[in-house]
Image (cartoon, rainbow, N blue to C red; front, side, top):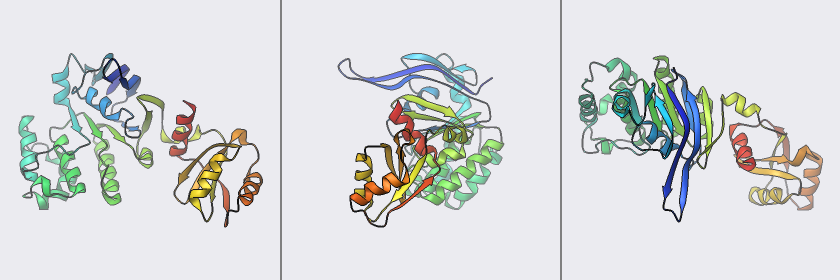
Length: 307
């Protein structure tokens, strides 16, 4: 039995004059105990998908199950079995850390003590602030409190919608370490994120754009599907370099990645010599060009350009 099964889900917004397909015939499966990532930018459909799977939104078409329960017919059973952490901090700002946790435990007819072992590693980090109002916590502390509240009833499936957006790099790393520990306890975790580097933390990922899934596989296999030889290029004037590389006749695609631009040539024609001649003609200085290995963001951009 899969933890989550999605078949041909369709969700639209708008009126007859202007209809936007938030989810366009989405299908995938998540195995029990898997850490599954939904990777994509804003507007990809990630939040709509999570709201449907947590029974907060109805789809126009298709079916979905969570722990073999139908998201429409069995919504009460699903709500008792899943944990959901929305993208926007949604806890009670005027309640303290302790009061928020006690409130959510009471809703699910449990107590902090009963499931303390499940949240212990996370809660000990915010326990020194348990008397502080939630609205006065830092972004990282709010994140940890929200995760505790989503876990307090010991869910079998955990949905986390962009949990690391807006928090610092250290808090992001701590959060993913917490997810790895939760996975060891047998909890199925679905997490959405716009950060491509977080894909490597997942067992499998689905790359989403404009309501469609472009690829589903392990992060390693998705990167291996990249077609072509990738070049990393930089010069003294990076903005003009990007513009010139994009207008180079043999350029298939060119995108900025940190200190370099990643360049893919059409049909692998030419190479370093041809690019250098072109850039010298345009009087670029301190040119550095070398072959580089693609990452998952390179593959995402390639899929966007081909779909």
